[in-house]
Image (tube, rainbow, N blue to C red; front, side, top):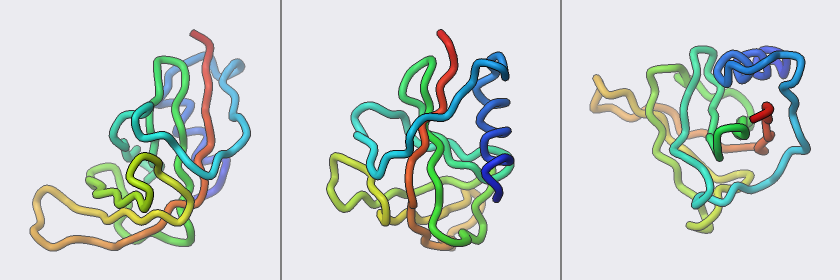
Length: 115
């Protein structure tokens, strides 16, 4: 997925004024106590919401087969308190008892919009 496509999805999901949406400096970890459960968008972008104005777009290392909007993610943080680069997640689909691919997070990019 290209950076432009990922940003476009984040912009639509956040439904703010496109001119004022901006990405910040990427982080290697997220504090799990400050974000919601992951949401997978229609184009396979993983978003964690922090608050009304900030979300984090999770980048994935390599390809992640099966990552799509109807997927559920089981996340396995190594630290337990933080989700970091190289931590793993596994894809599940509600209608299937067979788990999908296991993939790894790369970095987390903040996506901000005005309050």
